[in-house]
Length: 465
Length: 102
Image (cartoon, rainbow over all chains, first blue to last red; front, side, top):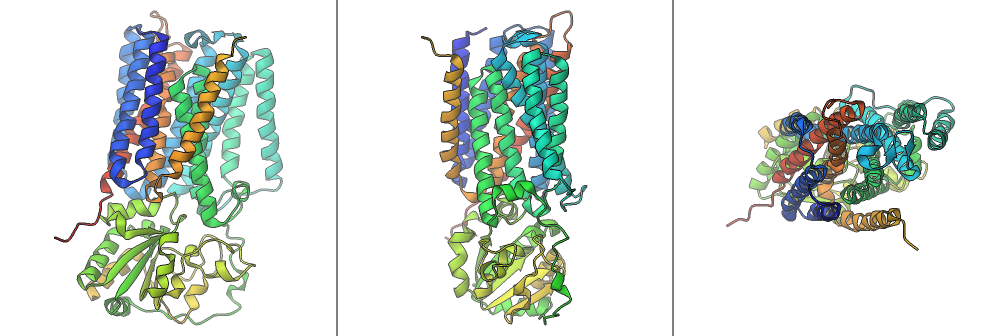
């Protein structure tokens, strides 16, 4: 058993180690060490908790058993999960943090003595507010992440689900949560506590269903942020510094990522949250109007172009993840490099379904990270490049975003792919991307469409080089 | 006059938000996915609350309502802690530099 002051100092240390864990991610070199700091911080926090409670009884054994059960499941998932499924995994993990926050809040409500918060029916007002906020945000994180998970996994359609009066309904439900918290505080009645949690679960679902597939990077980052605020809320209830610091870190991290993602799409945070973007409804009505000529080619043509180029920029997108084409792509690049062709990769901030999605997939395929460039760092190079190889990306290359103020994606930063001498565009069909906007690039003189599955096409090109 | 301890905790909270703000802006965009998985893992430090709740059960009755929720929360948080850190480590192992031509 250690004193409360000593344990508070240890919690502070673990909070600092968590800061260092995030700090390490500023470069791939320091990142692995950063992760170890994070693990160390977690071990300290857990050990100190055991020592502070200090009553080693049969419960302790059960705690260890449950810890190991959860740990085994987590470790199993971590080793088995394919890198392409990372967005779903992160969404799934968010839901667990949210639900854990709800459960801890429930325990604190049922047994406040254990946390020094008063007695049942007479819980300190501040604690009651803190645990309600923790529980409500946790519940929203849980059900919202479940919906995000289902959408990312493809179990639920990625297209937005909207109904008339949706925003009003959401607003009323949102207000009712605050009303319930108010009544809970004045009456300490358990039924208000439970109804508040149920309603929070409901609003989590309602908030995420209207948001379309292409906005998933924002949703995931936003839920990441929520999971942090939920943890912070519980941290205040438990008067635990490690939890408060971590909650604040995670909360601001998720908020920054959401901001970066919104900026990558030139959309305001609110328009994403209100949802409805990227549905089938907006699919270009003028599709039939003009059947513009499209130049299409096969693997041989593509191989010929690539072989004769002196520099190539690869533009990967979500389609590459779906087709699992990253390894085939790396092979293609290796072959090109053997022919003394300079190859680099251009990654748009919102390529894929979560922040940094493409970078992880390329890293998995053993692409050195110093060949992969962000939008701002590479955009000027397209003009001096022979071939742009667009694989599975679409909206992020659409020149319409620069030229047509009417377009829904106008103003979105795009990769200047069209400035290359020629563009190879691997895609299964001419269908528009998630924004529902026709890509002008398809009809350009210097574009050659390669209609095929990304992986198969890449493999065929390798054979032909 | 004494300052409410809540204010101290609130100060820590606000300062940590600022620390988070600057630290996260310095994260390189190519590591944004590991950032999400590691923040996931560290936010599961909520397990400390779960452990307190689980251990609070009386010796005659280990599984009271509140400790049951504590045990459940331990399982959930443990999945996240192990899963989050390990998957982050797995991802970070993959980030390699170009081999220098010797």
